[in-house]
Length: 300
Ligand code: FBP
Image 1 (tube, helix red, strand yellow):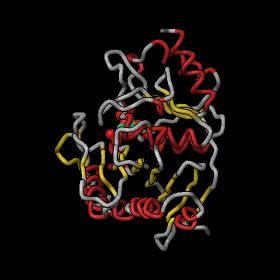
Image 2 (cartoon, protein in one colour):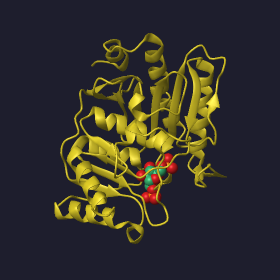
Image 3 (cartoon, rainbow, N blue to C red):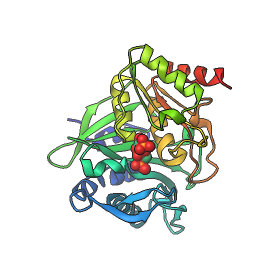
């Protein structure tokens, strides 16, 4: 089976970028091994006022330490850090954006969670999603699966028993499906979102919402459909973060023939104002994104 490195050697990526991608992907092994000793909450809050799981902090500290020592990375923007972490003496000129452990409320219940990563050239972490060089996530489920794009389509790899990522699927395309999942509290949803979810239900769509954005997106990538975390009454920005969550996942979705929106526009064209820029998110099959935007427009 083709390995991750063999796939990367077939792409236009420069050698240092291939090395950085592999370095990040294989941190999934120590992160996976850290689950058993990091089941509780850390007793601290992140910059969003969310309780940090011990594994959120462990994965964040671990990846920042590994990347800092590597010399490849000038800047890291992490969901678990209030500010951008800088390495001015790095020889490389990449910037990494990451959600070290997405879906952390599911750690204690042993459901699938993941690590979301985006890589930019030019050392600046606050770039538009459409300017990503690489978007990837490692999903810790029954298998450890890496989903990646370097701009030439989406590929998935599984970690084999020798600890090597081997090719699972190539040139993955998001089907036009009907699965749907929505965050937020129904009686706080805005009318446009209410209408959209009713439309999904009228189409006979099945509800799929686990509490982990990355796991729910992986289901959409496979079967088609849509994941939503909408704006709500008093929460016009929704919950999720543009830089660490929306952009890498949205870049993968677009490379797989899908789309990402905030309900009114392509999120990959939005320049982040600050690391903790929050945004409503609709990501998945193109036709459902178009339908969601139409529902929002009717109520504008
Ligand atoms: P983090 O776990 O990285 O904070 O991510 C946010 C998240 O957990 C998503 O993975 C998930 O889809 C959503 O929030 C769940 O939110 P809620 O509990 O409000 O439904």
